[in-house]
Length: 277
Image 1 (cartoon, rainbow, N blue to C red):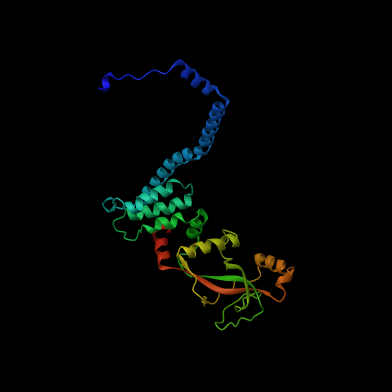
Image 2: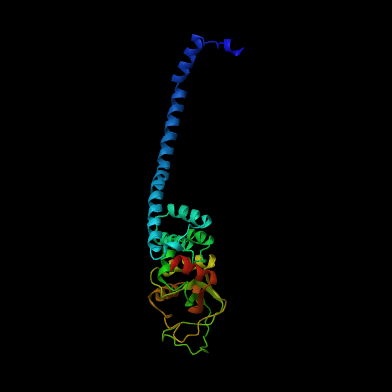
């Protein structure tokens, strides 16, 4: 029935009107707007194209690193990694250009491909994704995830005394005091780590605490004799002291180090053994 149906052709007057509308200024402006939108889309899409190319390069670099780590493993001990580790690790690595982070992904993948290893965990991928490149470097180059280390909080507080009941050896210029009323200037001061500024390092420590890789035991410190001899009025602390002396709000307060310690959690130690070491 529909075979014989023919559609009527458009009258010439309608065709002419459509042609005129196409040349109408509003239509022209619409065409320009569409062109502008396409230019904007192309402009902002270019990073995605770059990342797509980089993603392939990053995956190839990751494969090379994993191959290097498996070079000493007997072939019979190498197995396919679990998808819940391999897939998110490869995807996350694809959009990072950090060699420090890539080395963590490579270590994790290599451990997950070793039949003799049972320590690789899917959650480690999420931990690495929440680390900066500098934080990865920090974990690789310090003892943070290997042993307890001494730190101090740097405080502006009411004058107090420190009773050295553990007979610690302290620097002659030490400003270690007992905790009292005041406020923190820097919650985690670790002068023995010099890779980053004290302010940068303090923020990194906060993130590692958030990720449960390290712990800050309440009201505890190390009792090894020389643990806190490095805390005194060094150049960084002296600069803060000088600025406080010109601040009227700090009158009646003093600069003090409050002894603390940070320790790797069991989870943090395992993460170190699998992904960092």
